[in-house]
Amino acid sequence: MTVGDELLQLAHAVGEPQRELVILAEGNVSARLDDERMLVKATGSSLAASGPDDLVECRFAPILELLDDPTAFEGGAGDARVAEALLASRVDPGAKRPSVEALLHAVVLSAGAGAACHTHPIAANALLCSDRAELLVAGALFPDQIVVLGTESLLVPYVDPGLTLGRRMRDELRAFADRRGALPKVAWLRNHGIFAIGANPAECLRITEMADKFARILLGTLAVGEPSFLPDAVLDRIDGRDDEHVRRAILDAAR
Image (tube, rainbow, N blue to C red):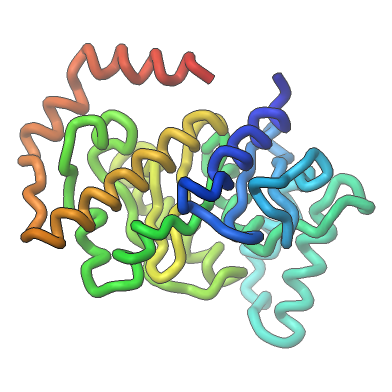
C-alpha cells in the first residue's frame, strides 16, 4: 500500500459522519514522503469523499522559506503571497491548491513527524471553545489515554489559520521537543480543533480516536463534578511499563 493509499484511508475514516470529527470540507491530513516533500489534502475537498487527486504533493522548501521570512505578513498583499507560496510548493503545477493549513502540516512534518491529521471534534471543541480548555492538558484520566497520547500534550492559543499560526505552532513544537525530547502526540488548538501527530497515517487515526474519547469522557466528568486525574507516579509507571511498550509495538504493526 502506498503512502497515498494510507492517507486516503485516514481521510475517509475521520470523515465518517458518525464520528463527529469533521463536516463538509473541514479538516485535513498529510504525510511526509521524504525530507523534501509531503502529501496534503487540497483546499475545499471533503475528507470523507477524498480521492487521489485531492492529495497534493508539495515541497517543504517554499513553505518553510515563507515562514522564515520576517517580511512576510498576513492580510492584503500578505495573504496573496501566502497563496503564491502554497501554489509554488506544488510538484505538479496542475494539481489542486493545497489547504492554507499546509503551512501547519509542513511545520509538523519537517519537525520529524511522519503524518498529521487535523480535525474539529465536537467534544474537543466544546472544551476548546470554553474557559476549561486547560483541563485538556491537565493530566490523564485513564491508562489507555497514556498509551496512545503519552503523558503530556500541547495546548496552543487561538491564532487565525495561516502564516501566524504556522509560526506559532513551530515555536510551540520546538519548545515542547526541547522540554520532552519528542513531539507531542496531540496539539489542542483553542477555538479551533486538534492536530494528531504520528509516525504514519494509521497512528494519526489512533491518536485522533483516543483524543476524541478523552474529550468525551472529560465532558462527562464535568457534567457530574470535577475530573479526577491520575497521579504523576501512575502516569510514569504506565508510560514505562514493559507490557505497555509491547501494546504500542502491536498497535504500530497493525497499519
